[in-house]
Image (cartoon, rainbow, N blue to C red; front, side):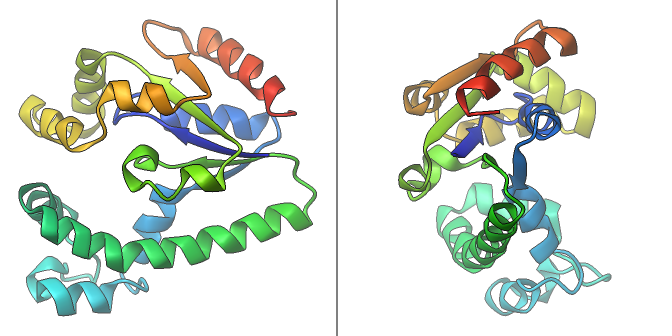
Length: 198
């Protein structure tokens, strides 16, 4: 079973992914892979420096995330160029992890894909889409608390992601992560996991 896990920034995707992993799913975190290929020595660094210039690479040799975030959100063409560099590398890593999970006998692979709806290419590769949802106000509050970004920065990120209604329309199942304790969220995750054969 191939499950795509998505939701807006601050919705609680990472928490849900961890819970699904404890229930036996093989978690594949596309963001973590993306961070690895853009870390110092990562496979995407040379192409990023060539396309955007050395000022987008830190002294340590990693992608300057803040500078690139500002550029990508201001310039859709720059964002497309960045994705054209990173996505094939991430795809190759994901394929290796799926093969490893299959060899290990895992019955369910869960892909944490923040931009699942936006990418357009993911849906046909998945058996189910699980959306973690909460209100935009909750998203903003959570991201400010964990990252120190300003409310306007978080709102800009939310605005650049797929609209909430579009994500919900793409869902086979929705976890409403609004005002829940971790225990209550875990109960919802367990219910969803049963439908994935876990």
